[in-house]
Image (cartoon, rainbow, N blue to C red; front, side):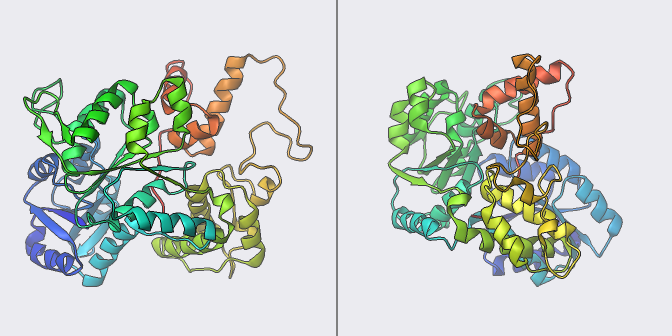
Length: 457
């Protein structure tokens, strides 16, 4: 766990730092936001930021977003100042912690971040075999390709491998290749010098240098532009990178793990993915089974998420009724663990009785879970006749109109998650983005982007 603390916290910094250090965290303390941003730009990454509410929380959150530094922010302030807490949350902080610091409270925050990072939860033998393979290859420096449907926990598996490797005490750095535009991804990976291009206001080290000595995860690598793949291949082979605008190469020592929810052999055949890069990355392949092929995991994960979200929302932890458990096991879960987590979060908020009943399990469109059983899909498409199973009437509509409605409805079903929607639609994330831009330019309301959070699997 790497923690960066912004500000002095009115003299409480010493106590907070000591507690974090006692819990095994590596702590960096900076006086102000600019100093902290400069620290992060130099490759000294962090897993969590704590900031004094007397500083500009909103500016920090927006700066991290603009510079594509994925870092959760927790605000801290003296006493239980409700107004300060609300302002910090509205500014984008994930949580507010009152000071003087309580050891158990800070420990809980650190443990929550650590748990989300690398905890593996499974009971099904199908997943057990995969975990056994991961443990076997973790000590090796070999590159690994992790494949599987969206939501199966590929990043969680990558973190698990990192924690089981000799590099566990070194950085784990993740780059979502699908979420970063092609024009920015090269800078994100390899860094840039000041003035290398418009907007390069300072030197920034890329993810390769930030992960030096540790592990670099290239998430959804199938979405990377084929032209950038050539530079990536050289970096992996030579173990050196060239910053944009730099004058000499920089040596790096990293282990590369890549993930994809696509069949990369098919992408090679289409000419969208380099075969030599696939060979370099796919030294060992770990294929994660979808949740529907891991029935023994469904009950265990459901109970885990109930406990997690009951605590997070301050409500009573209710057990799952027997009919609810059976229905959860039968559901197709096309969104896999991520969809199950969101469903159980809703159930925790909706349940009123002594147990979580089947009626409390609602799908994103508000329909009951039982409506999806037997149809092979988790949410009914708008326009379908549930009673008769009839197809929607498409006669008289253009292909473009039907395509538009299908894309928008799928995106709504995925709660704005572009990556998940593209997977369901069977198109690339780039194609989906182009379609959404077209619809937006035509004045159509497009669901806001929401790539969601990584969940344990």
